[in-house]
Length: 193
Image (cartoon, rainbow, N blue to C red; front, side, top):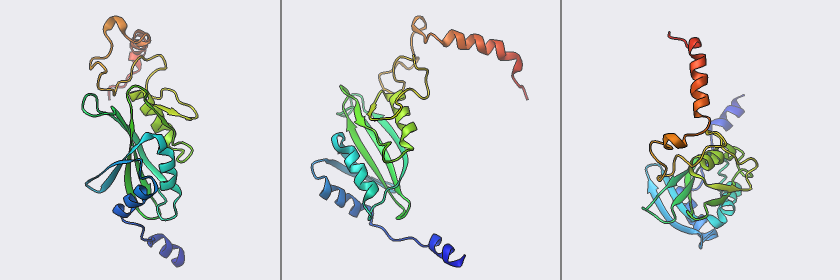
């Protein structure tokens, strides 16, 4: 028991974040666009064309081992930055206790990027959410469909050009009236505690 506990409490010292960035730059010199640091995490902005190669390198390299995808999300920089979108991967190495943020630029005219599901199974739901909310298509995703909104919903609500009030009343989502009627029907079962 003491040997197991000692192994759990100790961990190998991994590379420092600036060293990790240098390894990425050495391995993918043409892909790295920018490196920034904010609070406790370094961000590396890359071109999206080889994103899975970069992710696989970070995942598989024995000195890096970013084996946990903490989060995957997107940002819309409408009229502020080109390309318009970035897909952001927050990665963590359980073995080395390192964090890094990878940002992949995605153009507005063809918002597509390869899926990270083959590397991190948990990317499945994150990518579906990005697809649903931003309209970014993840090529090779095993089940890319809406996750938060109904399949017949039009538009992507986290895009900055999405109307703040939603669709105009005459263009409401067809299921809206059905949901309102169902809510009225079930009102008697609400708990007022």
